[in-house]
Each structure stands twice: as C-alpha cells, then as structure tokens.
Picture: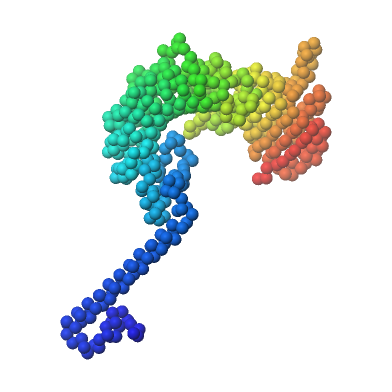
Length: 563
C-alpha cells in the first residue's frame, strides 16, 4: 500500500472514485474507515496496557518496593517528619500524601495503611477531606491538627473522641462550639491538647472536667479561659499558657492553686497570664514546689504581679529558667528606675532559685531594646540550671539599653553579689563616661574572676581603667591580707566585636593596667583582640605599642574585621 493522505488516501487505495457512484457507496467506505480506526485504537489500548504492566513489573524490582508493606509505610511516615512540631505529636500538614502520586503501588499501600491516616493535618473548611481521612484511619489512635475548622468539622472529629490521643485546634470559628460539641465528650486516651486563637479580642471558653481526660499530660492554651477543675492539672507534664485568664474575678491564688496541683510538671511556659490577675489574696499562701520542672519561662508585662507570683515558686536547681518583662512606654516614663533587672526579682530570689548562689558564669547583654543577664552554674551545658533574666521590647523600644552599660554593670554587681563568679561576658556600648566606676565595682564584687569577654560597640578603654581602680588602696592593705591587685586570678581577656574599636588611649590604659598587674605578680596569660579599626591607624598603633603588650602578656593575638 502506497502513501496515504488521511482517510482520502485510504479510500483511493481500495476503491476507485468511479465506483463511489452513490451516497450508499460513500457511507459504506466511511464505515470501513471507522472499523479500521477502532481496530487501531484497540491495538493502542492493548499496547498501553502492556506498557503499564511492564512498568509496574519494572517498578516492582526496585529495592524500595521489595520491602514489606509495613516498612514501606514507615518510610512514608519518616519522609513527612516535621522538625518544627508543636506540640510534638502533631503535624500541621500531610506532606506524605504527595507520595501517592509516585505510582499506583504506593497509592494502594498508602490507602490501605490506617496508621498513615491517623495523623491528620488540615487547614480550612474541608469536611470531605477530613471525613475521608477519618474513614481511612480505621481504628488507629488519632493525632489531629485543625487550623480554622468549621463547626461541622468539629462535630465530625467529636464523634471519634475515644480514639484521639493528641489534638491541636487553631483559630476555631466558634469558640462556643468547642464546649458544646467537643469538650463535653470523654477522651480516655487524650495526652496532648492545644487550643489557640489569634484574635486578641476572642477568649475561648473550655468546660473541661478532669474525669474526661485521665491521660492528659500536655495542655497548651492560648487566648482561652483557664480550666477551673484543679484535678485536671494533676497529671500534666507540660503546661503552656498564653494570654489566658479566668472567667470572673480572676485571682492569683486561683492560678497558684492550679500550679500546686501540677506536681508532675516538667515544662512550664507562662506568657501574659499574670497581667489580668488580682494578687491581693495571696498573703499566707504556702510555697508552690515543682520538683520535676526542667524548663520554665515566665513572660509578662509591666506592671503586674510577677514579683508576688515568683516569690511563691520553688524551682529545682537543675531547671532552665527564663524570666522576661515587657515594659510599657507610658509606665517606663513614669517609673524608669523601677524597670530594671532588680525589679524583676523578689527578695527571696535564692529560695525561688536555689541555683543562684552556686553560679560561676555571668553574661550581661544590653542591646537597642533588650537588657538581659544570664547566670550559669558550674558544669552546665548552657541549658541545665541556667537562669536568664531580661527586659525585652515589643515593637518600638522604650529604652536604648545599649547606651546604659554602666547601669547594667552596677546592677550586675549589686543584684548578683557574693557569687563565686569566674567567667564574665559583657555586651553593650562601651563608650559611657560612667563605665570606670561601674567596672571598678564589678571587679571588686567578683575577686575570683578568671576570664573576661567584652563585645558590642565602642572602645573597651574604660574597662582597663576600672580594673586598675579596683585595686585595693595601699593604705588599706597593711595587716588585712588583701591582694595587691583586683581579680588576682584573672588570666584571660577576650575583646571581640565588629563595632568595637581601638585608639591610642586604649593602648595606654591597657599598658598601665598590665604593668600594674605584672608588678603584683598577676600577669595575664592570654589576651585576644578582634576589633574593627582603620588599617592605617591600626598599623601605626601596632608599631608603637604591640611589643610592649607582648612583654606583659603570656600570649597575645590580634585580628581585625575586614569591612
């Protein structure tokens, strides 16, 4: 058969145009073409089916598809691991579903694996997808995260209450529906519960009874009403509260009573809960012991009953602690002297935090809007037993703390006195004219200091001035056994900062201090400087002073940030 041109060629090859004398002849030929086209389509479908079969056969020989279905399902689960889980059991999406598009075998395995469908993460009002997930989960335990669910979806989930082990509900449409259709049902295996709303004007009302949640160990509540059933807190190991309170006449004693019942707590985070509580009824309230606590964070606005609240806590020495206050601009203007680190701490702070007397390392950090002090006990990894106090800003800072380094140093020495501090790190603006006196007080407060690290901005010139000033007066040394220099154990000084600079006065004060210490037998073993400097100016200073510095220090290193 020669070349053809569509259907016309096919007709010409079989039948001469002279033979197509009637409409019936043409119709007959069209039927022939249709039949042959159908045969070709059938053949193509058969070839497609063979290709699919062969591809499936080829796919079945892949090593991953040789795994038992249980292991392949586990691979699917691991591929969807979310490293920012919050709470830890809940995923905010179901990324593994995309694996169902790889091949029909994977889809069949996934659809038949209830354990995959038992972890559900859905955003928005999609009840059909939720119902499909719930159906495919069969009888497995459920871990559910719903963001902005509809009441219809909440009702669907409530029907599976007995199988829910962990659930997170974010931004529910109707908070009332939570109490009416959800929380009145027993959840015998529920361990993790998270309820949050982003609308600051919305407070979620929860009518929760402890008898309904015998296994509850983690409660995360944001913009909600605190459960009034004290027994609900007894089994908790984790309690995270943000912008919460009680329905009517909220008092600090109610909150302390709830914590007193939480004897198993290991993690406690409280954010803006104290602001709306009345603290007038806590006189004579017994201390609240939290013996198993390993992580504690308290954040509240100023003013509030933070001091009163803290004074009633007893936190174990191995607990990691963060205490933050956010000053309000109007309150700061009226009472700036009251908004300091000292103002965060109750008089019995060592009873609240028994780890403090053993602290050997302190860090002071004063930036544009934040002022913080970190206290670290010996042998800590930076977490265990570490305590962090801070004044933090939200939005526009009420105070540029970086220019108040002298205040921070003075407060450091006054609040954390009589501690066996061997390491001190200070970050801030080192240009204040009041710094020598403040440094002098610090060095006299911590005579066991061994390592000093300075960072931030400006020139650390006044640190050396303060160190010399801290040396005991010769007239007062006689007969009192006082060391001839301040901090006689000081062996290492590190000055490191992109915005820190050197000058002629810096080197002159440095040399004066080093010579004094050398005469008293208290030489530095190591001086490490990494600063910002004008290269031409730096080279001139180095030629003039560097050899003298090397004569007075065991090991000296100097580096400059290249801008």
